[in-house]
Amino acid sequence: MKIKQLSVYLQNEPGHLSNVCRILGEANIDILTLSLADTQQFGMLRLIVKDWEPAMKLLQNAGCMVKTVDVVATEIPDQPGGLAKILGIIEAANLNVEYMYAFTSHVRDKAVLVFRFNDPDAAVSLLHENGVNVFDSVDLYQIG
Image 1 (cartoon, rainbow, N blue to C red):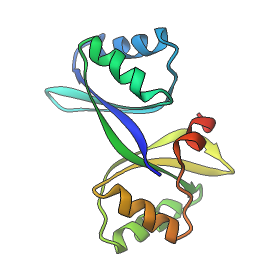
Image 2 (cartoon, one colour):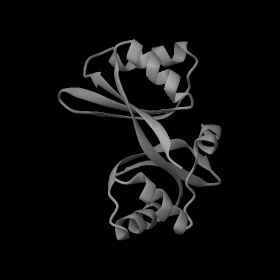
Image 3 (tube, one colour):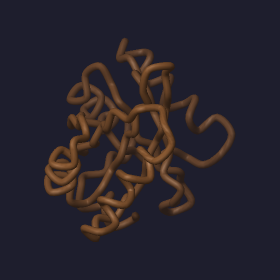
Image 4 (cartoon, rainbow, N blue to C red):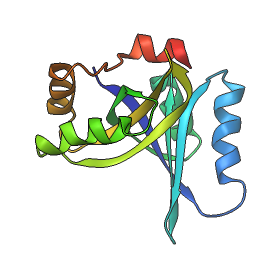
């Protein structure tokens, strides 16, 4: 159960981030969660939206460089050591977490984290085998 994430390359200049948000807002596309990172040359905006295909087309038509990436959204016990336990499972299987970020929403008193793995299919199987809830798109969009 992988989720499509949009990765948008932004110039590190005022107005580029707000332009993306404006384009999506005017199209009534809700941003469920996001992460923004920067380098000296550009920013990387990672977004999860319900309607990722129309969002990608809108942003591309506006001149944005956009790609899709498969990510995995999981429930993590929202308590000390909760994330460490999940990371231990992942580490023991020699999977690599390339990056991760959190939803602002909770589900059943658990945090929701989004992971980018070097092998998302293997990660989904491993997490399921270890009793970790992995969201599919429908479930994820209902919490946003």
